[in-house]
Image (cartoon, rainbow, N blue to C red; front, side):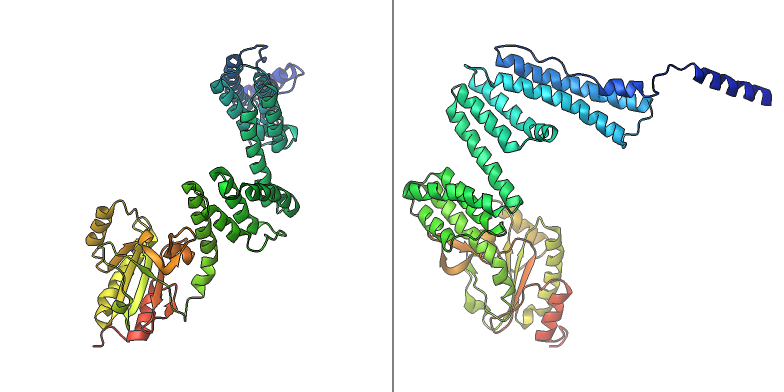
Length: 418
């Protein structure tokens, strides 16, 4: 038995001596070196678009072959060698695809549909191409804009230039590049001033977006009162879309400042009004001298639903002593029957209103729209239970779970006491 084993080992060693001098990873190297199909020379955009499909299919096959070869040659998929092989493979195919797209974008008399496809495909490829070549995304987009102007499509180039501008703005914000952001915003601000009341919805939206984002750029200070000027300028437009942007911009400004207002509420009175789902209006007199919980919630929010059972128990214990609840629902108000069915099923008997009907009393936007309660107080996360004492002042803005019971016991004493 031992002699047979020894013979087998000897044969194995002898066989190994006759392996060609090539490395044991020839299959992997060959798979990683596969070239992309040749780019056609054509005056048809369709040919270049078809080439992209061929290139993609060939790349998929090449990657599969690489994976198979790696397994055959025991190349670890987590190794630097595998990562380099895959990266080189993808790079070769991507560069050929970009070459095809550039050739297609040099053609004149291309249909709008084909041109749109070429642009879309190039925009999709640019991020990967920039990683491969080390170029900047905005520079590649600018090159495409130049290509479009050369083939007589300045209209499309203008739209692309807008994308380039947005990319630059976004990058300056992410990098906290106050200097670059300042220059970009100055361009937009000048356009807004020139437009006056005749500003387009597109420019109004762009200006509002960048002006609001300006507050997040470290080292950049927005001109005092500029946001208010924009709101008023947009509101003066006769275009309803621009007026809408004015309202949304004003509400966003209120919302951003709302969180501070929310956490300054304890010890102060809250601003609140609205219309309940049964059509009746909130009357402060109905709640005078009572303890009131304003509960902002939604049926689609699991923590909210769990919290509602806590509120239901507290309501059952303390309602006879003067405890009241008002729910502000963030549910879809286009399905009032479904919402009412939910309330009935889980026996939530206190009054409810949809969030669009909960407003700040006596307050309007520049365009005359009611100011939503949730926006004014910066409520972006639910549930938000706000407990108000008998004196009409807020006790806490976070009366959740045991905290609600603790606060009610402080006010009313033990629920068993009559």
